[in-house]
Image 1 (cartoon, rainbow over the protein chains, first blue to last red):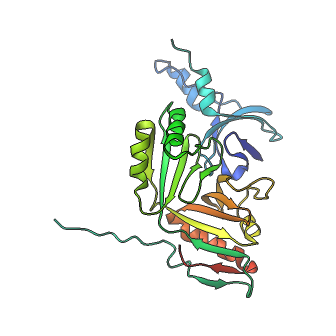
Image 2 (image 1 turned 135 degrees about the horizontal axis):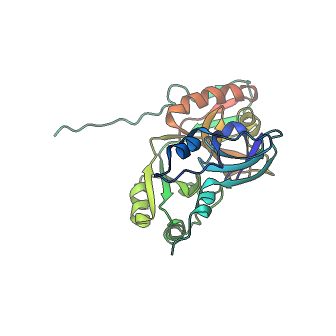
Length: 93
Length: 201
């Protein structure tokens, strides 16, 4: 599998480290124990398209959100995790 | 007060002796340890990337690269080294860190890496073939040209490589603790092409 790093270009999977599901969102600190349990432990395991966090450990050290098909390794999109997080952040005046 | 003098010693002194190695009569790879380099890592402070580029342009007339490129020359160069990070590399006796601190002020965090990295200059007609044995990125002239740089692995060791010219010649920076291991991969890789190791310079 090869990942196109938005900063470095196309690199082999050996340069990256998988860091988990990119779809989970950290709950509010006051959330219930059940919500926290789900955030920490419960994961979907889709056969097909998924959104994952990868870290370019042997390159530019950027965190990436990789949209890929976990059955075929086809990659649909790679985005800097920083940009994904900034886009999610509520706009403040 | 007791004065403590620290001696600067190359991690390569024991493993990279000047001479000829491998295939007799051939010079496919020429290796030289670079000495006397000042290396400083710059990380732009949040939201200051634009102002930093302006300050570098104003102070040294160089365009701070926003893609994996090197701007400048042997006297002073800025190498892209990750998102909003650069390596400044200079030759000579001046204090690079102080000079950067004076001109870039609070726009970037500076970390002196002069003793943290070893830099090798690689040249010779078979340099690409040698590197291809352990460096997975494409160094073909179509894909990697003078001024290009990359953060990647060489012999499973994290390195930053940049191309100087078309001969082709490259420089490769490695964390000093790994410099001996990199040589342990590089010399056997180049043996079949014949290697000349030049005195450090």
